[in-house]
Length: 390
Image 1 (tube, rainbow, N blue to C red):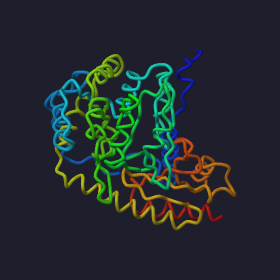
Image 2: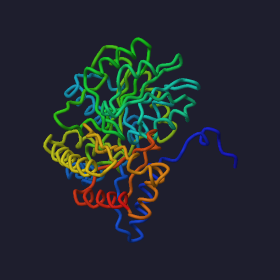
Image 3: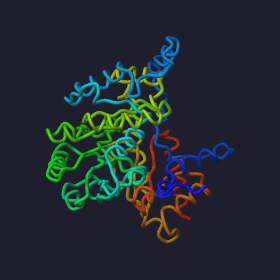
Image 4: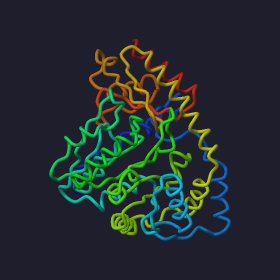
C-alpha cells in the first residue's frame, strides 16, 4: 500500500520509543534505570480506584455522551471556578481520551492548510507532528537557558508571521519544567490580542510546581485571553492516572464543539469507568496531592545537584513538572556526534534510558524524568558520570 502523505510527514514519538526500549531491556533481565517515561511512579490513589470499582458494580460500563458524563464536566467546571475564577457553560467543556487527544482534536479543528502554529522550543515531541497532520506550519519560538527556558514576550513578538494563527503555550513545560508567571502571561496575552492569535494552553502539569511558584492560567489574565484560549488538562500527571486516559478541555464554545465533532467520528466517549474515577480525583484532599508534589520537589533537588556535579553538564533547576533538561554538549562533544548518539549508547552500554534533545528541538540536551525513586536517581546519575568519564 502507498501510505498517505500526511503520515509520511510525521515521525514516531521518540519518548515512547526510548521508553519501549528500556522496558524491553528490563524484560530481558537487565538492571535498567529509566529516566525516559513521562509518568508518575506513584500508584493511583486508593479513593480513585475505589470509585472505579464502584462504577463497575453500579453498571456504569456503557457508552456515555461523546464529550463526557455531566457529573464529571460539572466537577471540572467547579474546579476552574474555585481555583482560577474561570466559568464555563457545560458545552464549553469536553472530556477526551487523554490530554493528547484534546490537543490533537483542537489542532485538527482549528488549524487549516498553511496556518502557522507558534510553538516555543524546546517543545513536547508531539506538538509539531500534530500540526503537520493538520496541514499547518510549525513556527518555533526560541527560549533560552538564561531565562530558565521561559517564553519571553519579545521572542514571541519576533516569531509571529502573517499566517500565524495559534500559539501552543505549555506551563509548566515538558521537557524543560519551565513555568511562566502572571506578569509574563499578561504580556503574552497582549501580544496575542494585537495579532489576533488564538491560544491552546497545555496545563497538564499545573499541580506540580515548586519553590512557592503559583500557577496562573493565561485564560484568567484578560478578557481577550478568556475568550480566545482553550485550556487542556487531564488526570494523568497530578493524580498518577496515566493509563486511565482521561483528559479534558475548556474554552470557546465553537472551538470546543468542533473538537467534539471530530471525537464523535473517532474514539467517541472516553472510558466510562475512568470518567467516574476522575470525579473522585478532582475531589481528593489537598494533602494527597501535596505528598506527591513535595516528593517530586525533593527528587528535583537531588537530581539537579548530582547532574551539576558532573563536568560539562549544565542543569537548570526547573520550577514545575517532573523533568530536568540539562545541556550536555560540553560533556559529550569529544566522543559523540550528537545527544541522540550519546543516549543510544548510554542505554545500550550502561542500561540508563534518557531522551535525547533532538526530539524536543534542542540538540545537545537530554531529558530526564525524576518520576522515579531516589535510589534510581542516584544509581542512574552515577552510571552517567562513569560513562562520561571513560
